[in-house]
Amino acid sequence: MDPKERWTLLRIPTNEEAQELGTTEREAKGEEEEETNHSLPNPGPTPSTTNSAEYPDLRKHNNCMASHLTPAVYARLCDKTTPTGWTLDQCIQTGVDNPGHPFIKTVGMVAGDEETYEVFADLFDPVIQERHNGYDPRTMKHTTDLDASKIRSGYFDERYVLSSRVRTGRSIRGLSLPPACTRAERREVERVVVDALSGLKGDLAGRYYRLSEMTEAEQQQLIDDHFLFDKPVSPLLTAAGMARDWPDARGIWHNNEKSFLIWVNEEDHTRVISMEKGGNMKRVFERFCRGLKEVERLIQERGWEFMWNERLGYILTCPSNLGTGLRAGVHIKLPLLSKDSRFPKILENLRLQKRGTGGVDTAATGGVFDISNLDRLGKSEVELVQLVIDGVNYLIDCERRLERGQDIRIPTPVIHTKH
Image 1 (spheres, rainbow, N blue to C red):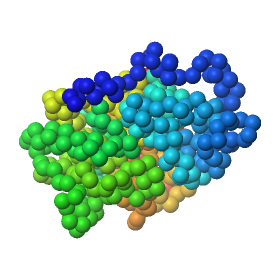
Image 2: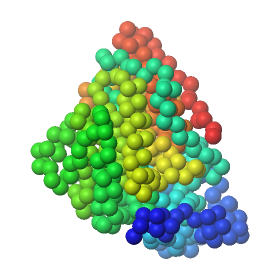
Image 3: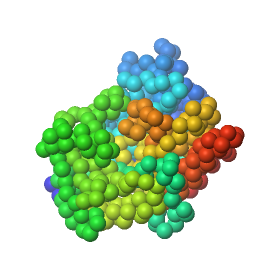
Image 4: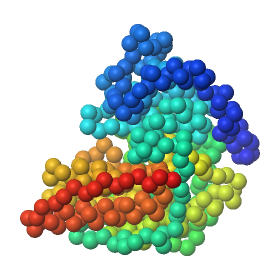
């Protein structure tokens, strides 16, 4: 089938069609009384509040999905499907299976295809608004900006910053996302992407390595060097179907210097990464922008395109990655600040997040953390990278002050830019 025919079959519904998929005005009014406060944890169903025997028990859950999935919303959406057959229960299963931590609130849901965000918008939109610092996809438009010349500074003190990277994800329009894709679709993603990447030239030129053709030792070396993704073992990913048929049609493409990489069929169709050791974030972002534009051009040359719309930006599997899909981060040594009780609040106010250097669900070792932007949607790529640059420099200043025995302060919260 021609890819353009796939886009026609799997297109986003028009406003009129979306209204037909949605609820009636009477049903919507009836729901308002039951959804008076989306910010509170969902108390779970009682016999008087739900007519569905399928409503999940979310009374002990702490994720965004559980905070916004009311019995009324579930009843209205549970029988709907996207054009590829993806259902509400499939969207939320990872959040149902993983209640979360009292102090760590995950998203708790995934998309199976591009249309998921439209068909199930009554649940996804409030989740997106909570996760993305107030960005309202019903009234706001996302901005894309890949002009690296706008970045100020961008050079970190390498006594603290060990490495810098910028990554994003991109999805091929007309093919299901990893939680829902068939084996054939996954292999088609690999074929389309690898064919396009063969056209990269100059310092971006490289080659593709299939996981199925690597030895375990080769895979582990790339993982240890932070170049390659590991098999998904996090319950958040496995419950969402990310590990199906592993390692079929998965792989990594990288240039000769291993400074520009593409992951194929991990959590998203592709992850595009620019990275290097040291603290030159400006150079990393310049390479990222140049490489990403070239990859998109080569994809379009072959008759395909990336999933995108003006309200959500680039479409990816997890709602946390919508918009830019961008995560700009550093591996940074903060042995003193990380032991300070104010560290979590400082990160929160700077709109930054921390992970272990092994990625999500890993612990920090030796006071070294992976620090990156928390938001993806509602700010442009340039704005997010600048936010990380300014925030990381603030963390370094705090660490220096603690080294000298001086006090530190919690910064004023970063305000979300309205678009």
